[in-house]
Length: 113
Image (cartoon, rainbow, N blue to C red; front, side, top):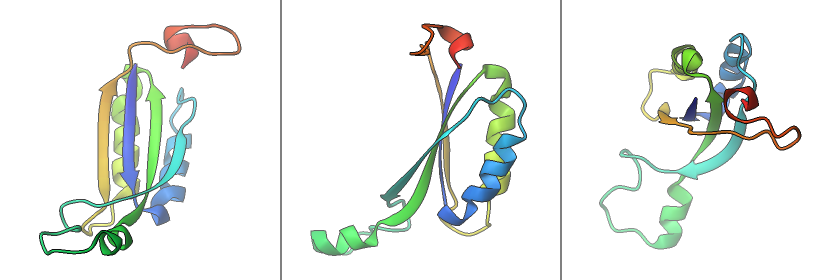
């Protein structure tokens, strides 16, 4: 099982969501509104803390847990649909998920995903 975390621009959420819905076997995703900065923002010039807080850029954080066989499809869907060609399109991270437990039934592992 894998845990995929993606940070995308808010206006790309509908496109990414529609692409993910087309992947057979994908059970769902979680969406969070976040703010942050990357290489291009929060530069080296001195700012007050208040100014830095206003410089944070709004993004959407997607979290997807899926079977190993779906990882490439999920990543490709996010990457293709979130791409604008402009700086700050976002990032995708992939980590191992060692176990999962469905609270309602007690199922564990891949059956819980």
